[in-house]
Length: 316
Image (cartoon, rainbow, N blue to C red; front, top):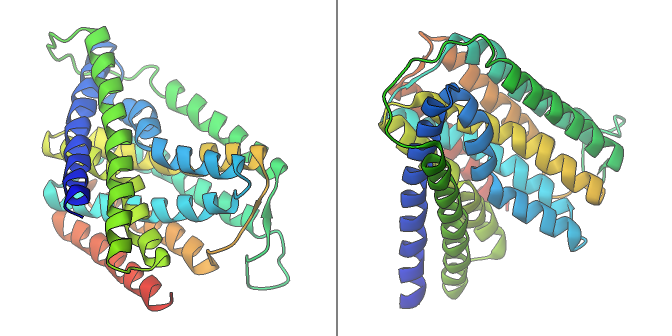
């Protein structure tokens, strides 16, 4: 168990160091390529920090258990929106651009609504258990993701990027992004594997491990990256990471998983889907207040996640 504790610490250190390298590399790339940091956060950083969710979902589909993917994505998105935005805002208030409030966040809300609609194949009963996300549903989500990517890159046209001196080359910035992503993925996997083994050694049930350690481990890259970015005054990367990860999780990960193998929905309820949507709407509301997520608003979001997790554990 001592060795497991050491690996848990090693995993956290790798994630934190990787988040720092990723943030520095992404910010440098944005400056050198005259691309807004928000776009880097929505694309490169978001896709990279969602790698654990992508790995878990695609592997589960290939192994014939694709239903695990839905619960993984819904749980991760709720954690992204409530806990990660909440903790990040408490560390450093997040300044949100008008364009993000008007266009980027609404796209995340639309993606959440689309998932709810696709999960409700049977409308005759107030339940989603047993419903399917078919290959056609998967194609619809992938097409929606293509639209999101097209919009994201299109919005960079005509935007003025503040010129900031940066001695880091494009290749060095890209290298730090890759190194940071590798450390995030490896570190989170080391953390989840050893924390789960440690918890089982203490006779903690698999359901509680899945709700806490595994969910937290796959969202650890987003948390570390957003907090580090916010502390460095790079709120655009922090909020872009969360928004991009949520869209990537729903449209790309579930879309790809659904195309590989249709998913039968199990283990999640309309309450979980509703919480995913409500949490995003709450962040959207907070962003309207002076275009800043303040520390007290971050505390409200964090307490919301704590309350939701307590409710889940009480109903295990």
